[in-house]
Amino acid sequence: MNILGIIPARGGSKGVPGKNIKLLAGKPLLVHTIEQALASRLSKVIVTTDDPQIAAVARQAGALVPFMRPAEWATDTAKSIDVAKHALITLEGMENKTYDAVMLLQPTAPFRSTDDINSSIDLLHADPTAESVISVVDVEAHHPARMKYLDNGLLIDPPFGEAYENQNRQELQPMYIRNGAIYLTRREVLLANSYKGKKCLAWIMPTHRSVNIDTQDDFDYAEWVHQKYLS
Image (cartoon, rainbow, N blue to C red):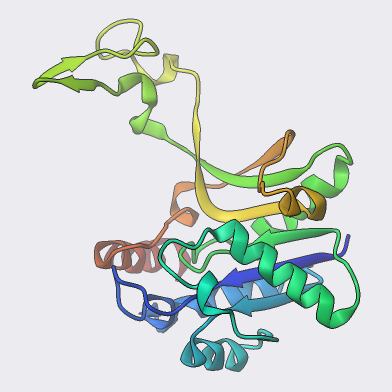
């Protein structure tokens, strides 16, 4: 399959200024994702950014930055799927070719491995009826069955709650949440405004590779995870 890897990395992060090039384990956050992607079987890897400094870091790490992202797709409210579509359409126009699928690789999930990328590609390739592969992680102790509504200070059980108070986790049906590491989508599905489509396969990742960084606390936790599991 001819798969385009797109790494979105805009400037102007408010939660952590300069987040995408802030150092994590000695290298810019963005570079962790670039290295994984370049070592994978993705056909091409590009970074879409509006920031010249981010573009320079990306190019130094070996990624292509074939164009700068327009300001309208680099705001706080810009949807990631619109960013991905813009990158795909723009590159295809420049190259006069089309791709079979797109893999969105967010820099804020720095610990996905090259094997995670390649295994997701294998899943999609093995099932011609599948429209996408999305990476997930087990919710573990944060199972929805244990959650409560709040009504005037009172804890209210939802209809999907535990069968009895403090039900053993092992008795609950496993549930998973997207971890933001991998969105692999066939071209026609992405252009129809969906990462998932109607038939989506799951690539399950362990907790330590599912770190997602939005805040300084997340950075501190990621440093600990890297030292414990990835050094």
